Amino acid sequence: MKNQLLVGGHVSIAGGYKEALPRAAAIGGNALQMFSGSPRGWNFAKTTPEDAKAFREEAKKLGIESCYFHASYLVNLADDGPNGKHSVDALIAELEVAEQLGVWGSIIHLGSFKEEKKDAKDLMPNLFDVKASSPTYVKHERYDLLISNIKAVLKKAPKDVHFIIEDMGMRKIGRSLDEIAQIVKDVNDPRVRVCLDTCHLHVAGYDLSTKKKLDDFLAMFDKNIGLDKLECFHINDSRDEFGSLRDRHDNIGEGKVAKDVFKLIVNHPKLKHLPFLLEVPGFDDSGPDKKNVEILKSLIL
Image (cartoon, rainbow, N blue to C red; front, side, top):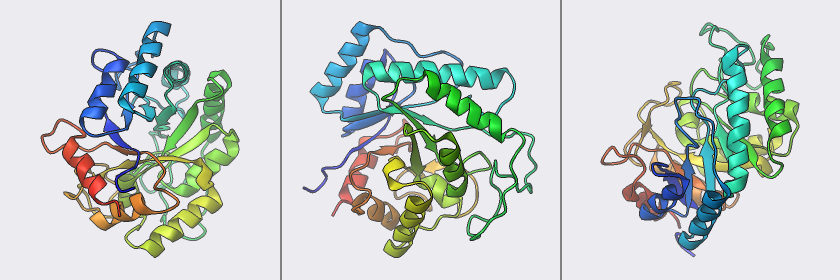
C-alpha cells in the first residue's frame, strides 16, 4: 500500500527517552533515531527497568516500529589514548540501554586518524579515488587498534543489538564501501551492520542518479559487504556538490541530491523495507519535521 514505509527522523530525548516517541509520531514517523545522552560529552547511557518498560509500551501504543541510537560525536575507536577507552565504554553502556529499551542498536561514526595528511592513501581513512576499480591499500598502524576496540565493544555488548557503521562523506574512517567491507570482514561478527547516508554517498562520489547506477551500487554492496547487513538509511539532501567531501545536510529537495535519487531508493525492491531516517535541518531549522517526512512519503509509487 502507498506510503506504508518505515520513516522517521532524529528526535530529541529532552525529558527522557520516552519523550522521543511522541516527537517522532508528531512528524508522521513510525521510526526514530535519538542520542542516548549528550552527543558532545561522555555521559554514559543509563535507564531503569520502569523507564525501559514505559518506553516499550509507548512505542507500541504509538506504532513506532524501529528505534535507533546515534552514538556520540566524540567516539573515536581508532584513538590510542583516553578517548579510545571512553569510546569503548560509552558504546557498551549505550548498547546495554538499547537492549533494555528495545532499540535495535547504535549508528556509529567510527572516528579518524587525525594526524593523516590530506593526500595520504592509507586504508583508514580512505582518500583514494572511490571510482578506482582496484585501489591500493596501505594498512594504517592503528587499524588493528580500531578492529580490537570494535571487538571489545561487541564482547561486552548484549547479543541481540546491532553495532551499525555509518558511511562517511568526508576524510573519516568509512568514506568508501571498500573500507567498510574490510572492517566488517575483519571484525567478523553478525551484529555488525551498515547505515548508508544519502548526503555522505553524494559527497563521497557515489552516483545513484539512475536505476542502473543504483542497481550497480547495490550489487557492489552485496558482493563486498552483503545486503543482509544493510540496516537502514539516513535520508539527507546535501548543501554541497557531488564528490566535494563536505558533510552539510539539507532538506529534501532543497539541496544538490536530485529528488529522483530519493525516489529510486525508497521504491527499490531491495531497499523499501528498510527504515529511512531523516537528519535534515528542517524547514523551520528545528530538525526533522513533518514537511520533510511528507515529501519523502510523496515519492512512494
